[in-house]
Length: 81
Image (cartoon, rainbow, N blue to C red; front, side):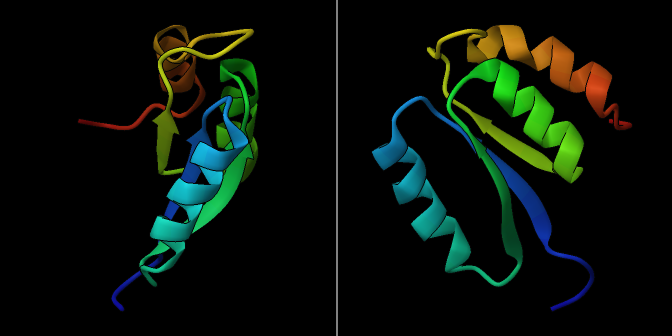
């Protein structure tokens, strides 16, 4: 494995969906699931707290939906590209 693993936060309001995605992702040694969230606000906080490289967002979530969370995620961790 070259370099650091990809740090991922999974955001979905359904616990079974999060668990399923986590099981798939942790099977790859180049991916590290660093956080999970049940709503968009918690996803933004988890991405900041864990310096996530990738945030997998459900579109329809309570508190802050996935589409509304995107601008906040960009401000929280701006990356070139």
